[in-house]
Structures are given as C-alpha cells and as structure tokens.
Image (cartoon, rainbow, N blue to C red; front, side):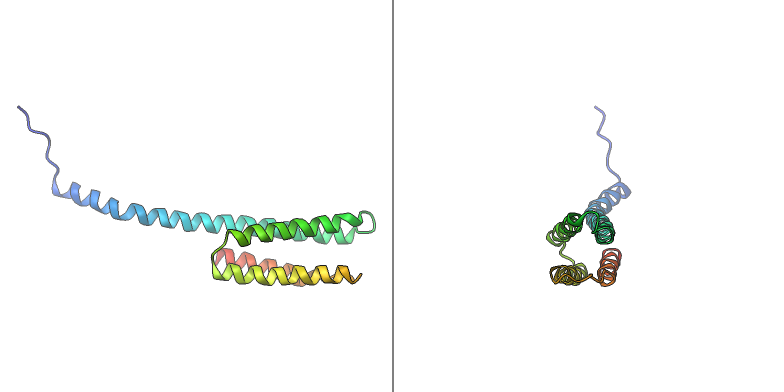
Length: 131
C-alpha cells in the first residue's frame, strides 16, 4: 500500500508563515480601506463646500439652495464622525463642525459668511484622512 505523501519541513514552515501573515494583511487591508473611505468622504465634503459656495453666490436666484447645501454638508460631516475612530480625523471634524456653525451663525445674522475657514478645515480633514 502506498504511503501518503509526507509533508516536508519547508512546507510546514511556509504554512506556518502564512498563518502568521494572513491576519496581519487583513489588518493592513482594513486600515487601507478605512483610509480610502475617509478620503472619499473628505472628497464628498469638499464637494459639499463647493456646493455651499455656489449656492451662496447664487442666493439671489435660489435662496433655498444655500440651506439645502449646508444641510447636506452637515449630514456628510455627521456620517464621517460616526464612522471614524481616528483622533486626527476627529479633531479635523470638530474644527470643520465649528466652521459650519460659524457659517450658519453668519447666515442667521443676515451676514455674508466667510467660507475660506470652512475650506481650510476641509483641507485639514483631507490631510488627516491621508496622513
């Protein structure tokens, strides 16, 4: 009766190495996926800010558009905040939320909002997602 093929020592080491490496690669992929998700959301927020800027520039033609654009921006910030556990991202989100509140306060006071700090805060979020 033929004997089953034996497993040689290099094969055992290769299998053991794979058993150790595979969980690490899953963690790396998970971290990379989180960075991609954060980056995509940061891009969405940057687009939201562009929409806010456009809406404020065209407020004479469509006054409701600015409010809708601001609400979409707030929703996307909340979404990212719920899905982030990174401290740098959380700090950038807090700054972004502060700038959104400043814009909203200016609008509520019937003033023209300064959108530059809002754009700067979005840039900081992008850096936090990729850094």
